[in-house]
Length: 365
Ligand code: F2R
Ligand code: MG
Ligand code: MG
Ligand code: MG
Image (cartoon, rainbow, N blue to C red; front, side, top):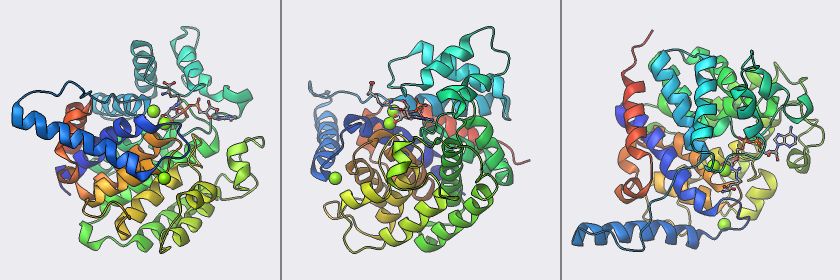
C-alpha cells in the first residue's frame, strides 16, 4: 500500500467536490460542458506557467460542505487517534459556524444548532430528532466518510469500519438509509485500498465483494424505520425493499456492462439526488463504468479523470457524487493521476495531502 493512494483518495475527493460544485443542482449536464470546465483550468494553468501570471479570469474553486465535514472527520481521528464522538461533533458544529456558506444541506444545520446548545447532553440527540424522529437519509454522512476508511485501514482495524462509520454518521444522519449509504461508501474506499494494484482490478469481483459485505449490513437492520414518504426512494420502489442498497448494486452489475449507457437511464434506475440511496450507488457506478469502459468523449483522459468528469456529467448532486466516486478512484489509482492543474486551482488540496500523510503514518494496532 502506497502513500500515493491515501493521498489519491483525499485529494481526489477535494478536487471532485470543487469541480462538481460548479454543476450542483443542475439536472441535465452535458459532458462537453464538464470537459470545458476542466480544460479551462488546464489552459489557465498552462498560461500561468508560461507567463508566470495568473490570468485575470481564473478563479480558484472553493470546496463545499462535503470537504468541510470530511476535514473534521480526518482532523478528529488524527488528533484523538480513535473515534471520539464529542470531539467530532464539536468540530462539525464549529466548522459550520465558522463558514456557514459552504452549501450545507437544508436540514442538517438544525443538528449543528442542537450541538451548539449547552443544554444538549447527548451529541447523538439532535440528529435523532430530525424529520420527526425518522432521521436524515441525506448523503451528508457518505460524502465525508473516506478519512474513516483510511483510518481503519492504517490501524489495521477494517473489521471495525462499519461501527466507526455508523458512529461518525449518526452524529448527523440516523435514518438507516443515511447510515448504510455511508457504510457502503466506506466499504468501497476500503475495497479500493485493498487491491494490490490497478492491474488486478476486476469490476465484477469488486461489486460482488460489496454486495457480500452489504448483506451483513442490510439483513441485520432491514426492519428498522425508513421514511415511507420518501419521494426519492419511492421512485425506485425501494421503500419496502428489505435490502435497498443490494438492489441498487445488483442494478449496477448490469448497467456497468452496457455497450452504451444513457445518462437518463442511470438517473432513472439509480438516481442522482441528495438522498444516500440515490447517490452513493451512482458514485460507485461512475467509478466502475470509467474503470472498465472508455467513456465516449473522454478518450485520452486517465481513469481518475474519466471517473470524475463522468460522475459530474450525471447531473443532480454533482459535487457529492463526484467526491464519493473520486475517493474510491483515488484510493486505487493514486495521486499521480490527478491533474496538476486541478490540484492547483482547488482549495484545500495541501491540507488533504497533509491529512492523508498523517493517516498513513498512524501505527497499525
Ligand atoms: N445542500 C446542498 N446543495 C443545495 C444548496 C447548495 C447551494 N450551492 C447553496 O449554497 O445554496 N448540498 C449539500 O447537501 C447534501 C448533503 O446534505 P445532508 O448533509 O445530507 O443534509 P440534510 O439536510 O440532512 O438532507 C438533505 C435533504 O434530504 C431530504 N431528507 C433527508 N432526510 C429526509 C427525511 N427523513 N424525510 C424527508 N426528507 C429528507 C431533505 O430535503 C434534506 O434537506 C450534499 O449534496 C451537499 O453537497
Ligand atoms: Mg449528461
Ligand atoms: Mg456540497
Ligand atoms: Mg452535493
